[in-house]
Image 1 (cartoon, helix red, strand yellow):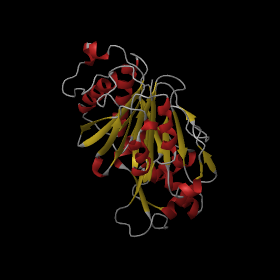
Image 2: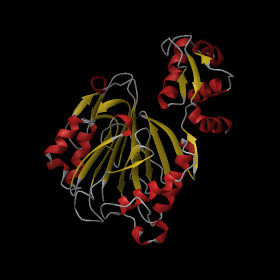
Image 3: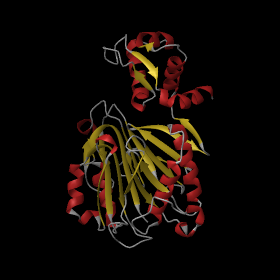
Image 4: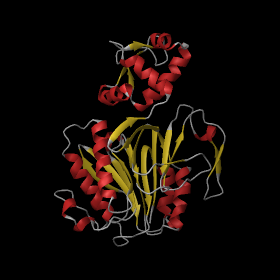
Length: 345
């Protein structure tokens, strides 16, 4: 089969450490490698080759040359389609004025022979079941009237569930803002959250190489990494089969099970959202601290993750920093349907 790798971060970062370990997986998955990353304005860069990643000088250069907030990568063990550039993942197509990137691990039987998956305008360049599935997903998404995250994620889960009935369907998909990950075979996709404070030594599993996190990461950097198999000796989380995971800015924002999107919040995030959403106007940080019965410093730290996830925003007319007592916060209008649904559960 193949292996998948993706990164979501709140800062443009290099992939030199963890991707170094992923590239070694090309010793087994030798029929191609590829990496896509996002530039400004929703544009994706793409480099791929139909050759083993560990033997590619270009792949070695990419480990230092890529700096982005979202990266999607793949090493291929061909099951459908020739060993060629056009059949090498990831694939890129444009929808809603943004580049969408897709990579797949698994085999889908008879997709191109079934009239239910007949394509109208997004046609594959190569011969893989993966690219056909990607084109079908984009065609179905293009008809959405409501493009809000909740509706988009629910539709994507329905498509993944339907396509996944035809075989193993583990995939990574991104539009440059969100990273979507889906798995339908237990134990074949994992994720890791690297959040501050960054401390300790991390070692690659496939290479005798280690780093100190405090030397690698800034203390305001959030990162989420998705991979077929764990790449380091950190605490990786196995994904649940049949579940769509949505990452933003290096954190897990949303999961979708049985077409039902649900925000991923800890208790304090939930309390912060409830306090801000229930107010008739934007809420000052000092008032939020008073409402929650915590110190001003604790309130400031409590807003970091919701701000990073895009759930709350600071008032555009504020002239004070985010941790100032007079900083004003309100919930993101685009995510309010999800926020309201979560708060009423």
